[in-house]
Image 1 (cartoon, helix red, strand yellow):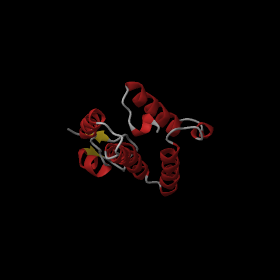
Image 2 (cartoon, helix red, strand yellow; image 1 turned 90 degrees about the horizontal axis):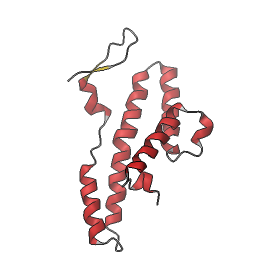
Image 3 (cartoon, one colour; image 1 turned 60 degrees about the horizontal axis):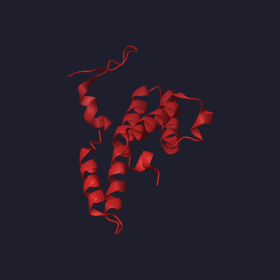
Length: 130
């Protein structure tokens, strides 16, 4: 089991995952084939192409946020939840895994969008209001 993606219990796992995400989004395409998050990068590349063709760059931002901050945490919760149901999962692992699951809070674009002010009449970075 890939602990970086399935149960990142050490800080270095989170750093490696973030580095892989950064390289997958901004790095050369050749690097993606060995990337631990190749499936995410492929989906984001398709979304980038679609948003470039349509001119709707907010669409790419939405897919990026939903994939990275919504779907991935949900998948992580599901995977860990399945693991703690296995007969070889001892009570200590189960307790620590349940505590870990309780800390995972997925965020989706639809939850963030009301807090964003976007003026599409001119090119600018979205500002997040408090």
